[in-house]
Image (cartoon, rainbow, N blue to C red; front, side, top):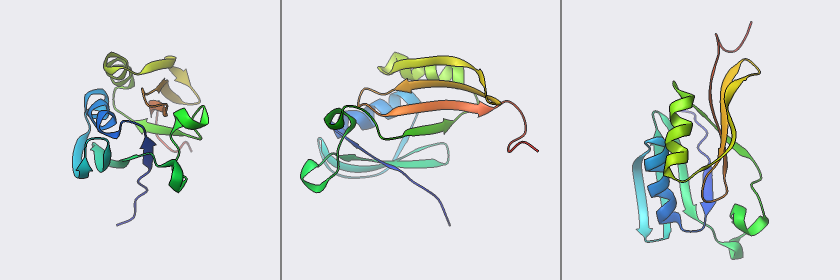
Length: 129
């Protein structure tokens, strides 16, 4: 099996797991530790990612510590409009509303922990011919 599973470093890791469950319907696949000192593997559909407590002494910096994120995570969803609404209702900030661009239906949010997400789906067959 080959996959890429990003790990998001956050302050308040326990709260972050609860947010991703509420915002994206994520399932917790694995969790070790307690409170905010955790490492957890989550999945949205078949897409897995990890959430872990930030640890500046180990070079694991949260977006809040550096004043912004160093990347954006793309969540491909059947209904981007509904997922963005659900994420905003759960506490995310809408960065750009869902619209059609670059052959995709896309919207962008920033989660309460500073990570930027692009939520969308291709408007047609992907990759384009």
